[in-house]
Image (cartoon, rainbow, N blue to C red):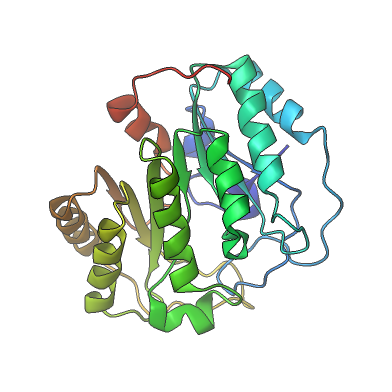
Length: 262
């Protein structure tokens, strides 16, 4: 199994692995997009591995995970963007661990409504999709993505199933202005997004975007307070915070119900 923790060179890898906590990455380890902030390998992906969902479930069971995060590379080469693999992964994990909280961190599926509907149909507990940055920087940071499309995905998830918690994440230090950060927070609250994480962008390598500035820890604390006042149920904000950092803290606080395989 692949983990985005390793593929994206997460600075919190050893801390999370000792909890144990990991974010599994399905649909292979090669991404079809070329986002300039990300260290995941880009290129031509291999065919879908149909055994992957079962192997993922076996790993969750063997590790005894009570909260599992499942993400993927972006697969623009697939007609459904990989939605069927997410669906299968959720159902397989439900079979072996009906009490396991399942959090998905999904790509944008190019905005395909049927793909998003299929993911929601699997009934995960949390669906995350990262806006990553402010709209003015999308052309530089998120090549092939659309701010409106990403926001629309989170909005549609809530419309389709209001019981699913939604989540997004921002990288700071790419050249955004404070008023833009606050505007994104407001956009997320307008669509009833429940969870927000914010962290410092760190340049993975010389070929990636350079850091515009380092945000002081005190500023991250200030943003956390502002976000909580806006109504987010849970906020993680700090220089090393990433989208799945301390993910299980939310489920321990807010998700009490068990789910059975449907």
